[in-house]
Image (tube, rainbow, N blue to C red; front, side, top):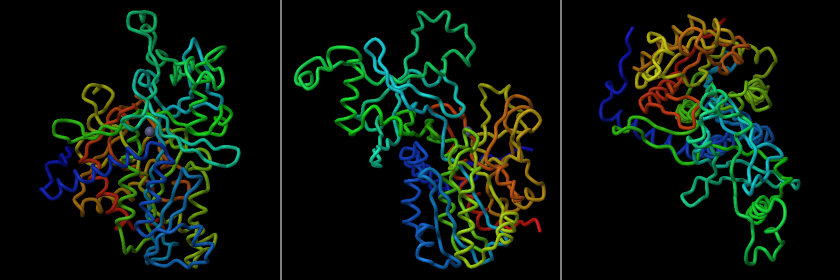
Length: 474
Ligand SMILES: [Zn+2]
């Protein structure tokens, strides 16, 4: 079955909406390069759209009823939002769930060293990356350093035009005969991903008088530490309680002469987090309560308090049901089992340069709309959620009614590799879940690409889902 190209379905009004959405999306990508930055932006925008903090509502003993909007944040890295519908929550809610962590390099806890008058920060990569893609590109440092006093210093260096950037070196081609014989997985070792952050000892002028950094061992490292101390008030020991992420420096861009695509860092899975958030705040007067989850740690297995496997979502739902006056253990279990979810995660777009990795009938293509994946997993669907046929039929009806361009896909050919999402975790409650999102080219690379039309179709699809999904198991 062939799918239509979404661009061919647009009138001038839709075309403008599609391009405008992509412009706002790019500003989101540029602001939110880490989980914390995404949560910051989403919280601000949620509050502008009438969302109040759940803990605040609990403290004030506020009752919630249809039309009320609440959000809750976990450790500044995960977030859940609800708009209360007119139906009892026990009948089930409609959930969009995306992740806001992306593959990158994390700074180690004891990271600083100097080697032959070059200062480095040692890193440990996070998520699935091709390590060789991270050398010789401009990199930025984003994150927080929390001092013993409890004060949080926010670091974001490498994004402004006049900021310095950082980089990881690679061996010059002239001397790479041995290196290039290695397989791609080891051509750059994980332990070799050390960030270059300085090369100048303080050997002149007033600087020297201050503390003689110019002489002796590790003069470059000491000089960098002095800058960190003067600019941010932090010392070497403060790296111990820091979360610093090394990401590609620079902003997202339109790609192609026709500006049909967006090239940017972290589009897995912010290409789905963004339309999920938009759909959540722009959908009103609902029968079923709507919910959007924006979670951390998906790229490393959804572990930890801020990952999908934690009880964060369940606890927030219990509190919301309590404020609605309908909490009981049984009601909550029913609510969870009766819920519908789109696990808003990206898919692998067909790449003509590597066509052999895909099975073309069951692959998503740039520009053909929102991708629906019944299952993911690898080696015989292992680890996959595998959505229910009855639920998929229900969703097909919703998307068709709104003329949303959709396509179905799995991750590449059978036994070519694979991947997972948060779908199986929410399915543990017995709810209906399916993966559904934007196809991405060069997924997990420093600069991923998507089609603006796919972003727009996904946004339209998510809105239709929150408004119209009503499938229950009982
Ligand atoms: Zn991913």
